[in-house]
Length: 494
Image (tube, rainbow, N blue to C red; front, side, top):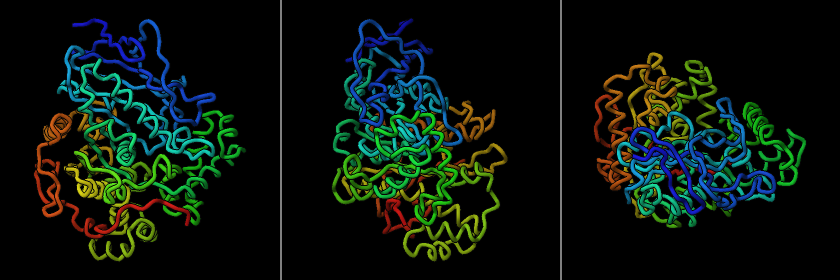
């Protein structure tokens, strides 16, 4: 077994390290640092190097926004990591992980994304850092929009060039992501440049958050005004990235004051999201797939039962939402005529339950379901699951919340996030659900079949992951009917 594993990429030789029986490479650049004259631009091709480049530490993360933002020194933000079971092998399936974080935060170095269990199951696992927050998704005049998506494409192009050197098969690439990572993959499905870069996709909790160019321009002007600059490349390039990220965090806290102008966006706590700019992103994924603008693929889609519960708890609002707040949520986020439909479909629901239902549906559950349907309409095959097992920690208050599925899929129940959700000693039932979901990932990445029937309109079969898992018709039928003819629409100025 190699003590100091090496791999020759198209750019140069890299040296990783052993981790048990695996070879692990970290912090490999897939594009040049997007700073100086490259700031706010599309990712530039990485320059090659002579000799051997050490690849043993995670790369730095871009300055981030939000209360849980990561921070690190350095500006080599566009790096990736590879974990492989055997450098000498050829043709192993590849899983490329795109982290979430509301498009404003997140990093591949999060222990929740530790690839060891997936690598042990025979996958070559790649995880990437990409630009988020102001650097990646604020609409800057004179710069391409959705730069974070362009970074992801550059990373996938690196995989096509180089993954064979790590034992992977470039024709067997599955992209996987949760929350903003899943939304990223949904967007990639609409981009011709990305079509040849992966074969399958796994998306958990696909967000419905996209915005119009008009709204994105308004947000950019508001952010630039906070730092006394114009919202263009020349002016914003002179603002320190950390300062700009900090102001984006502050703008997120101030969003309720913009309700009359920014509508739905003002309720999210996050000021930026991907923009339909007409160049990088020309159409919503749901319309692009259902309208025949792009073809379907093998797609594994999942969401949790209680998506919004995580945010209720994080905000300290669980048990305090009022009838007025429920009415506002229904007015802003239910589809046309949906407010009355929700009250009729859930007559016993309290105001708080109604609020959580409509937020869970509008932000994650229905975008995920509608993407599965659109992919099938485009000629693809969609498999669906819902996680219904509640997080046992903290007396079960989190329910089956947003992000609960991530440590289950990675098998990282002992990570800080895993312990927060499942406690220091996960129950046998939790471990069993984790094994099933992880096996489904591995089987899907290898064969295109997670182990249960495809989700088709006539039966709508869904794998329900619970203490006693089962395959049954889609469990959120009332919400499905409310949204049956309504895809997520872009956020816009009111």
